[in-house]
Length: 418
Image (tube, rainbow, N blue to C red; front, top):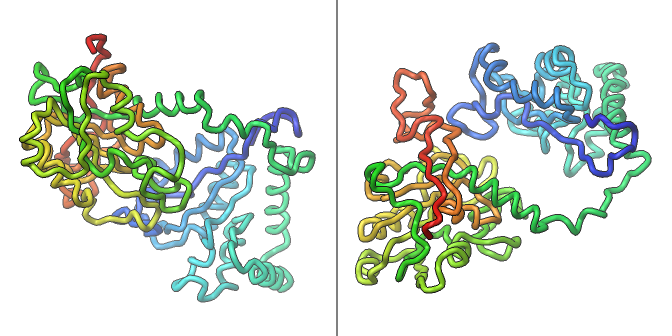
C-alpha cells in the first residue's frame, strides 16, 4: 500500500491490484479459466514471483483467479489465499474475487450459491465482486455467519483489511475521485511516452536474407510504396481487447490515436506516393512498380475466453495478403498480435518481419523504427513456435525447436541517411 500518511499526497495515488492469483498463465492448453497442473515448487517458482514483488512494493489488493490449481478452484483455495498469501507472504491489503468468481466454484456456476459463499469467504477472500444480485450474497453470508459456519473472526479480518486500505488511501477524508488531472489524460507528454514504449517493445525477427543485405530501415524517399493489410489502418485492431469496450472494437472511431498507415504518411518524404490497398491481388502488386511494401496483419481484438485458440492462426485474409504482396515486391510484414501466432509457412517469402504486439494508439512508434529514426532493440519475451503441435515449448525442453527462440531479436542502428 502507499507509504504516505493518511491523506497526505494521496490525491496523486491509486490503490493497485495484482491479479490473477495464482497460476492463471499456466493453464492446460492456455485455455482461460482452466486448470493449472504443476507441483507446488513449480507454482511458487514460476507463477508466484510477481506477487512477491508486488507485495514488497506495496500493492493494496490481490484478485483471485477463475482458474484452478491441480483441480482446486482458486476462489476456494484456503491454503494459498490465507495460508500462503496472507500468512506466509504477510500481505496486509485485501483479497478480492473476480467478476462472479465465487459462483464458478461450482459447476455449473451458481448451482449451490450458499456453498460457494462459504468456501470463498473461509478461503480468505475479503471482498466479493457481485455485479448483479448482491442482496442474495448479503443474505447468504449473513445466514452463514449467524449459523457460525463462517466465524466472526473471518468477517473481522476482511473488514479490517478493507478499512485499512481505505484509511491509508485517505478515502474517508476525500471519498470522491480528484478530477483535477483529467485534462492531462491523453496529453502530448503521455502520447510521447506511449510512442517510446511502442518502439522499444518492437521485435525485429527477420531483416533480409543475410546480414549484409538488410531491408530495414526503409528509405523515406521512394517513388511509390504499397501499404497493405487489415491492420494497417485500424486503430481498434492496434489496441486489442479491453479498450473502450471489453472485447475491443474494429475501426478508427473508438478512441483518438494514430494508425500505422497515418504514421507512414507522416514519416515518408513528401515526394513519395503511398498506395493503400487492404488486400491486393498479386497482379495489382506486380503491375504498379512499387519500391517496397509494408504489410500489416494480425489478430482481431479479444479478451479472456474469446481469445482462446487451439490453432493460433492469423485470420483471413492475412495469409493471402502476405503471399500476394511478398511474392511480388520487397516487403516488410508487421504482425499485430497479443501473442506468438503461426508464421512459419510465410516467413520465407518475407524480406523483413516485425512483431509489434498491440501498439495501441501510437502508430508512430512503429514507423520510428521501420524508417530508422530509432533502432530496433526489442527481444522476444516468449518463445515463438513453428507449429502449435510443439506447444507447450520452453527453453530447456528436449523438443525445443522454435521458429525464433526466447530472447531473440535483431537490432538496427538509427540512420540519418533518410
